[in-house]
Amino acid sequence: MTTTGNVATTPPRGPAFEYLTTKKDEFVGWARKFSLFPYPFVTACCGMEFMSVSSTPYDTDRFGAALPRFTPRQSDLLMVVGTVSHKQAPVLKRVYEQMCEPKWVMAFGACATSGGFYQNYAAVAGIDKIIPVDIYIPGCPPRPEMVIDGIMKLQDRIAAERHPIINKDF
Amino acid sequence: MTSSLFEQVQQALAPAAGEPDVAHGVLVLNIESAAVAATAKALQEQFGFDMFLDVTAVDWPERAPRFDVVYHFYSTRDHVRVRVKTRVPESDPVVDTLVPLYGSARYMERECHEMYGIVFRGNDDLRPLLLYEGFVGHPLRKDYPKQREQPLVPYRK
Image (cartoon, rainbow over the protein chains, first blue to last red):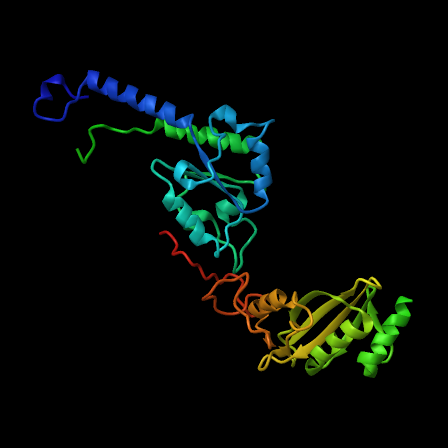
């Protein structure tokens, strides 16, 4: 912790400033974590499980992650649901690049996580070979409880992110 | 009724084999690769096999004519199927196309071409169907390495 005496020569620091920064980070994190707009990139049978988890009995709406946006430009959570083949890989990469920051990626199911049981000429062995992934949900297909757990873990991460006003570029 | 139809087809199209060869209720005709188009034409016009179900290949890496090309036809009048098998060598894996007889053969021959490298003479559109431009080799041949990948997007480090 710095003392208030340094304020004039270094960027503004101090208990009061840190308190404000922390409160701002908490506020931004809270706002972001409850307004996830998912983009479902559904390619295979896990899509059935996605429908199940996003509709009535399990209902990801309770976690603020319900409203699928069918354009990547409006979404901030890319849910890759199912096997991605080499022929689809350029499409997935392009969808990811169209999303605005901040953005997160969920690998939904065994195939998106690691290729699953496919090990052949056609399937990509895990989407993290193409785009960065924030949270992996294993299972073939994953249970809805696992997906909800994954969403909650991702929300914890989003809430804990820090966005310093005074950063290295300032 | 079915058996008499099978005998007629067998007598007309593959008399050398003698008795009809019926496997799981499907008549199997083994013919020369040059006779594929004529056989399909006779099946369609004389015996009412009006639906083309499938064409695929079987790879026998140890055998002398390496590939079987296998066709299935169905008769919606008699509700029976017939399987036509022919052999082609690896050096010259060519058979005649069935597109003039059955339009649905166009896509199936494209798939068989990309997966096994069988060339369908007369099919003018043998571009990749399920695979992509630039893919090297034929992935369903048994000498295609199981783990060989040809990614379109460079992998992340």
